View 1 (cartoon, helix red, strand yellow):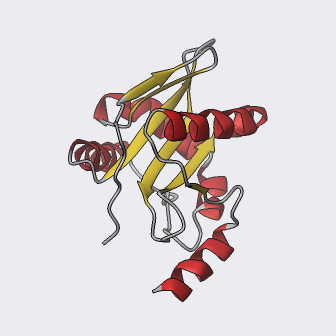
View 2 (cartoon, helix red, strand yellow):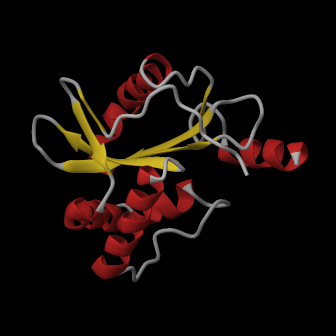
Length: 161
């Protein structure tokens, strides 16, 4: 099993554009609304890793999933965040920082944004990579599904195992 070894861990981040908070049950309703609004895109993005979100996912199922993310965070196994837009206060997506399954990277970084906020993707990618490198001490970030195509990543992981 891969282990994530950050120099430091933060449960939130804020700059002029984004606020990231631990993905946990208190944000379940806001998270659920944006997830379900983007479910087709999310299933396509995560295809090959998981079949999520289900078309009929309930708020209760989403809340349970967020409790699982919180537990992983507290155990320092993986780190998931809700992304809020500072100007509106709206939940606009999620970020996932996982241990890398490749020896070439310190962590795997996945994120998604609401389809209404896609213009912020590159800014968020840059922000996250800088934050993970400078504050967490994770210098080799695999930006999966962005800089590294998911299909290529999955083939590389399979080849290394």
